[in-house]
Amino acid sequence: MAKKEAPKIQTERLILRPREGKDIPNMLKMFNNDEVREFLGSNPPRDNTQC
Image 1 (cartoon, rainbow, N blue to C red):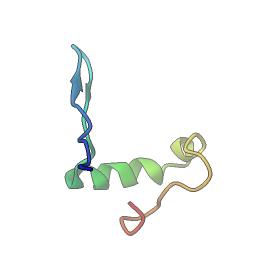
Image 2: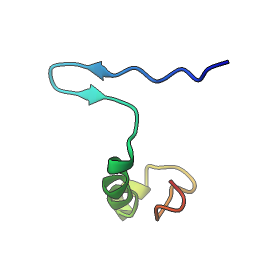
Image 3: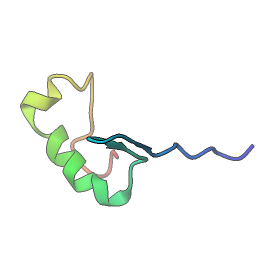
Image 4: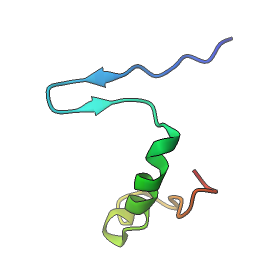
């Protein structure tokens, strides 16, 4: 069975799309912010070896 790709969803103010490699640096920046980590659950990644 082939893996189905997530759709791109776009509104006037928001675009939701599948994650890309170029997104990882910004994701890690957010994941390492203590104010953000408070809401990310038990163990969000801190470096790109966990993404």
